[in-house]
Length: 128
Image 1 (cartoon, rainbow, N blue to C red):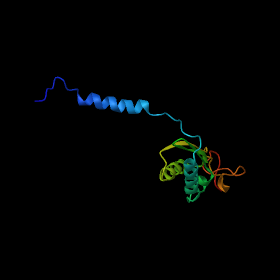
Image 2 (cartoon, one colour):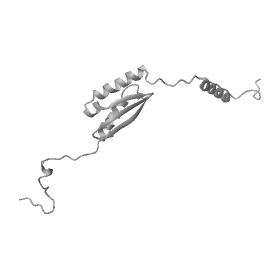
Image 3 (cartoon, rainbow, N blue to C red):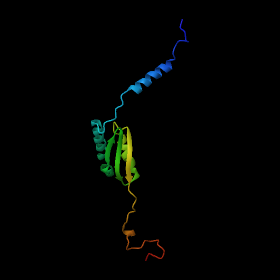
């Protein structure tokens, strides 16, 4: 007959084995630019260059560990969002650091709003 008084709890022995495996494992820092990082960078760049949004072709891509960093400037938040979406679709991308800035909006100046002609609707200006 089995005696429960002398038996060790299973949970504690499993915990000790896992703890020993984790603590005794050699800790090696990741290489600064491993060959697989270079191919991942090339794949992300190729994906962005192949997009139909011209602003994405001017972005720079760098890899640090498992983080893909996107740098550059775009005209709209839509283009910024598309850059992150396109990058996330590339196989091997784990995390993305979005360092893309959006240019300040500048209103279009056309012939109606040129400096030499008054705008309609301005007080004291009447259409003739």
